[in-house]
Length: 250
Image (cartoon, rainbow, N blue to C red):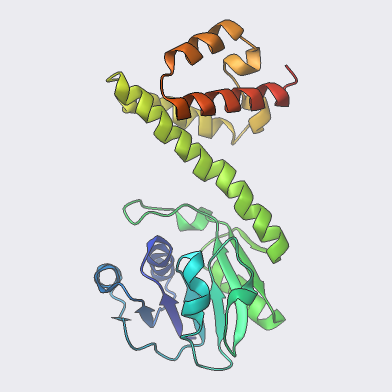
């Protein structure tokens, strides 16, 4: 089976690397950013092009959500399988006379960060049962966690991921603003962050909650609010504490 990966960003890089590590050949990398494509190509020894899209049996589109529809029009081969890697778009966003699918890896990707690909959940969807089996088997060569998912289910998977990853990382960034303002090394908070994330591997998040809001410690909450001079930080602090209080009916 000939596989072409379209894109040159974080998802394209890690998907190509995961395939390479599991001896799944990729025939070509295709995209518009020559520098990024060359970086991936040099790292993984996969040919790339910015102007000639090879014929393939499977095209994996790893571009931003807003570009998937336009990029999908570039695939003119009929009766091939095309899958996007978005968590928030239906397979019907793909525009072409080919078989449509989605191949969604649930992970946050950065090129500079190594990942254990065997731990990444993959969610697959296809119009055709044979294609579904093909995508499942492909994902199972990379990961032990593979699930068939409809678009309706995948929307909620992506929403959950935003809460669990994007929002949490934003709070890390806001926390670093505070520590930086007081010249406190953010590294000192990493053991706390590590313990927090590891704890929910054995406890439900609701049972793992600690802090002044869950204790309804109004003295500490008031003190913190007085310390925060940044309007956005204060807004976040109040909203998060109110949410915690409501969850525990305080």
